[in-house]
Length: 348
Image (cartoon, rainbow, N blue to C red; front, top):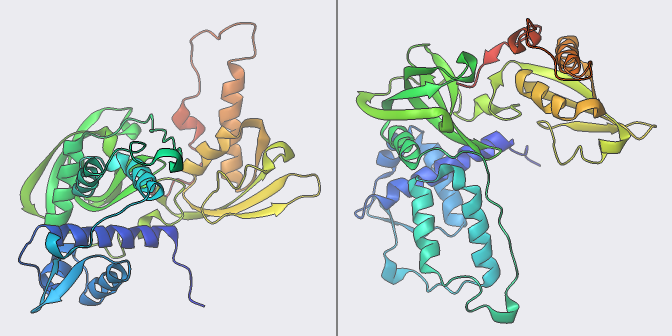
């Protein structure tokens, strides 16, 4: 049996397949394999592998006289979608909300607008669905479109970015986008930063403005675009670290709902569960563990355990007295994290 691809590899392949569809949608005359693979920056073998997946999924793509193109509308089958199928498409649209403004989402919106509204024709057979939208701030559509354009045309972009590492101060940097990623409803772009001469991850909702420049992207990553997210709890990219955390019995049953990357769960005699995972850096996993509060205890590594201890001690200090603490010198959040081995790439 072949090795099951990791989520990041699967996500990278899905993005490549979407990019092939976008390229084909822009050419009525069709494109050659070389034109498509050059636009995507992949090898011929990679292009043909992704094309095979699209064909097996029923994508209406034909090969004629050395060119690939979509079937025209007259050759497409009539659509007779069930209520459940329409509801499923709306659910997919909800998941794509963080990438609103992209060509892929735009085309899906056009399709959904052309369908009859749910409930008007389904009658008693209609299955009720409720889709809760994310409350997180979404990036402006023009930001997503510009990133998408820079990606597809392999151009540099100049962005104004508010980074958490600079307390929200805005900085202008030049980037060469590599891949879009969505983690927990937050869209990110992995890009090469020209000024820092390294790959970094940028949260799209923190990009205040963007300008796609005429300069060609020159950076060539030494690994697949999605690889930096291997082991990431969300979007951090860093040195891989092994962590071990014990969750109390009262929350042990929730461990599967909030998993760490490829975590292994080991039940304990007292009803608690010990979680082992390999994560990309300790910054993001630290926040995840703090969210469990007193129900979690870090067992390994020592630097993460000490960092959590320092953060909880600082929080407890604010509740030691009968009322709110007075403002005064206190240990900064950065200092509370200083014991961590941060060897990785900060988001933004």
